[in-house]
Image (tube, rainbow, N blue to C red; front, side, top):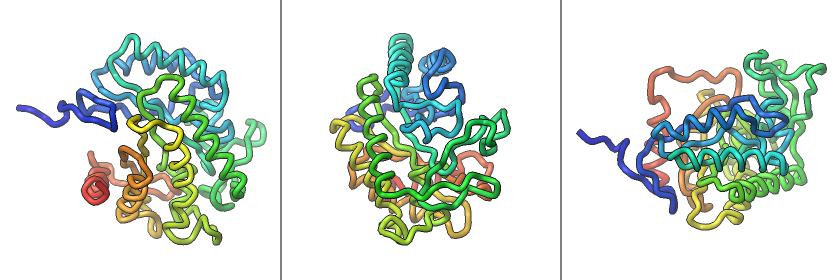
Length: 294
């Protein structure tokens, strides 16, 4: 009996021998954004797991875009050098191709590591100012982000683009943009977080304007044929939030902007997000995006 799971697939010009991919998993073990021997061991093991694609954890394009003090970054030469060493090691000893997920935590930044409580950093824990589409905190007791200006958007767009260029120099095989889990790009898309009344809020087109600006800038920096994708939200699982219809619309816009693949996740836009626990609960959203957005 054969399974599609073990059949080859192409992402742009990248050929993969099977459809098993290791999703990005935050390790909270970086040193001021710089990868460590922990990442060398963790990713080196997974590079030999039999999966054809290994996606490195959410890697933040700004120091203040990190979720925690332990999150991985790609915003400095030190960050780049460490990841170059790790990726070269994984390519040398493993079989998997390596992708990187570029991210900015937005209003969910400046928090404790999970084993420290996963709460917003206190004044004694070296917190930093968070940013987002609006001055609306993630939840009660969370830092109130500063609503981003157009200058902020230009800076963050440049940071994503610079991180993509660093990813190419490092030798990654694919790049994924993080549009999910309540982080910056997702928060612009979701009406639960984006309360702006300018051209970057309101309608779906307005809320998509800044994320699309990031996509177009990164796509222009990444050669045609090199896989560029996004992890998007299938649904916010909260009344008044994004729905599967929005995921389909997002998929259509991102495909038109030149992205090669979509990875569908969901939830985490507010502390009230609650999703099913049954296996494959994101599959119906992914299936609709694939069928209707192509």
